[in-house]
Length: 173
Image 1: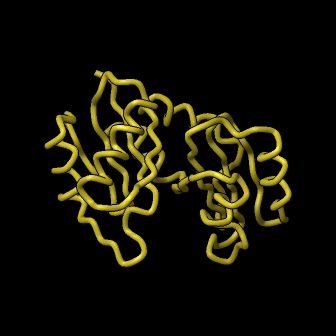
Image 2: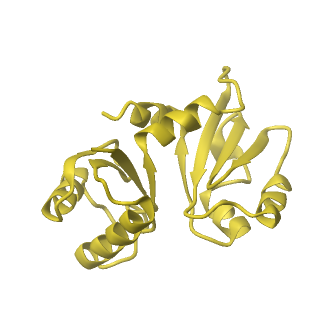
């Protein structure tokens, strides 16, 4: 059965605090199989034969019902995550970090132009379908770019994860 990861946007912000064990139980109670969470930032692994767009809608509805607020959800299969890691156009060298921005729909040309306008000597971007690579020289917290800025630029929900996290999730564990 295919293994997927649900990337949950902002599940633990704004005074909200969902324990990963509780999140796992919500998924299991709704029939998801082989559920596991990875670090406390809204990454849920599970098995399902359903199509990703149906999974996104189902999980968003489930979490809104159980938590009382909307949680935008972005699904990628474990093989898709492995491909994202492999396609990373940036090298991992000291003092750099790469994040992946996930969206539900492919980035259009206008959105890509808006993102590329954020390029600086320390911040570089590469769009690939529904995903965006953000390569930062230095600390991400020192950048003008962030998940909030990404959503404003794209004019849609998105979530960011560190490439190190994506590498671990691509292992499917």
